Amino acid sequence: MDTPTLNKVVRCLKREIQKWKVPAVGVIAEAAIDRPFETLVSTILSLRTKDAVTEAASHRLLARAPTPEILSSLSIQEIEHLIYPVGFYHTKARNLLKTCRILLQSYRGKIPRSMDELLDLPGVGRKTANLVLTIGFGDYGICVDTHVHRISNLWGYVKTKTPEETEFALRKKLPRRHWKTFNDILVTFGQNLCVPVSPWCSKCPVAGYCPRVGLKRSR
Ligand code: SF4
Image 1 (cartoon, rainbow, N blue to C red):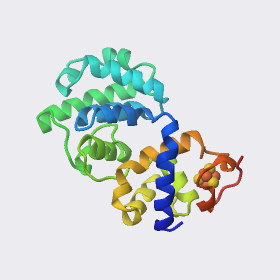
Image 2: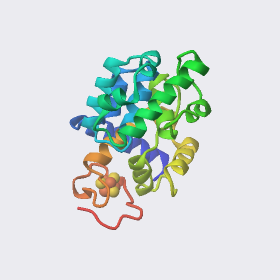
Image 3: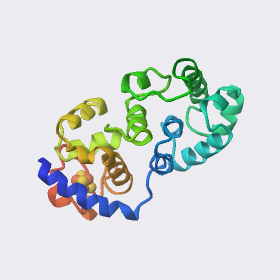
Image 4: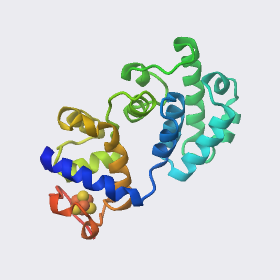
């Protein structure tokens, strides 16, 4: 798929996804534009966790601890209690506490605005860092998770083996105007129609543009 075709596909999917629920991080992030701490916390909680669970846990934790100062004053047990049952809640509670202490010691309680500094925080990978930069700060970045990686390869827009390779490939060729929305569109599409293993190609509004690279099974 070339870039002019991708532009058409993105335009079509933007309309299409309106009928589906936006992923939890998208929902929280929309409410947290320009509040990078909230984006950071909700994204850390979202890893390997269902959207509804992430959403509820983020609201509980951020209602009790809306700043790094307050969160760092809580005990691990209290944080665990507030975020349970998110996946790996014990590790996430520890990482959140360590992250908030680093924020207080090194950044006067603020969230750093660079990829390298964000990646140094415990529990923060490229996906989280990109979301904090794009949603929390309004900067440019491309957040690549498994859906973005998988679908970009199915479309033949990139030819990559890992989400990280996909991020760098997209940074080279994806028009900048799509950077901030690409993740929301592809995650919503990937959760509802272009699902892993056996996507619903027979119902797909962009099937005519999709070369289905490497696809073994579809419905
Ligand atoms: S045609 Fe199938 S593989 Fe291609 S985007 Fe649509 S659902 Fe996904």
